Length: 413
Image (cartoon, rainbow, N blue to C red; front, side, top):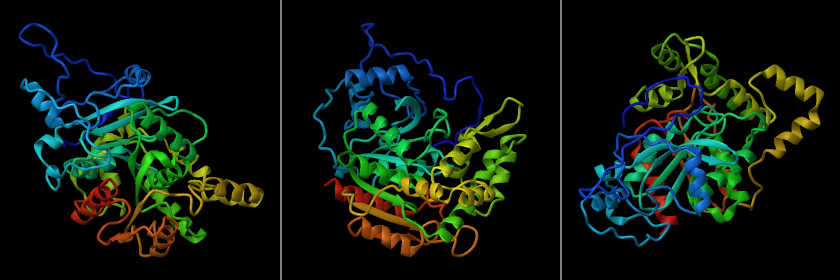
């Protein structure tokens, strides 16, 4: 997939819909269900999404119908409209990343919980997988893994959390409870009854909260380097890494190249590749002063941390702890994603084994991962030794891909 290009800031926080010509048959009548080309990004307006929701219809093309079926329909063959059994990966496409499997991708806006969520969608005829990104990230962080799972037949969706990327940025509370309700609205708008959730970092906490609150909508959980309860010293170490990652959100840059140079100077990303470039350029936009900056404001991260009893400023944390200690503790407890024994869905815990800046600064220590696994009915714990927290989604990793695809196949078989 080509790297995303930085965009100029528009009056609207999300991309505007593009007009497309509808193919016609030789008789002059519009062709039914024209296929979407791989290189075309389709942006669905909020109005269209709301219409799909109100009529109970799914977005075109519907789930459980592969891009291969669309290809056959254009050649005049009768399409097979029989729905696939939900939760099964098409065995004929296992371990195959074919051109047909990679042809179905689009970006569009979905109306959810009163806002628009900018969503990436990789079509497949197997189980639905929803990917939830981390604190300072965007949906592009899942591009590599999504394509791998699409090659296994999965129908994958990843979206920008509210306040991030090209999703709406409303004022008001920002916490995992709100994100869980946003995810419910996304599933409802797209007509998805159940899905496997893959959450990275903050996304893992959101996935757990959703599974505890809406258990009937979850077939399984894949938790990537997040979701565990940490000791105070460990939480402070994690906060230091979030602060390091969030620095890029405050800066302004002369051009996109200057932005990339600044980010790659950080020790958090040891190895540069096209996936990292795509992720970073996607979130970049030209500001009113003619300089470049990210589409995610630092105020979003501050509000998210406040819901956890934290802040980007150590001084604010200390002040709150000294002046309102009870409120500090209450807020932290309120934002817990789950209570032990409340998660019924099968789960898989994957941690990054390489340190981020210095040894012993991992987001998900081994002991914390094992405690999380016990709370989740003995979920397996896997360590990716060659990747840190930020690299684990951007680097090619056959071990990661196989473990996740095998888990999805098992729980949907």
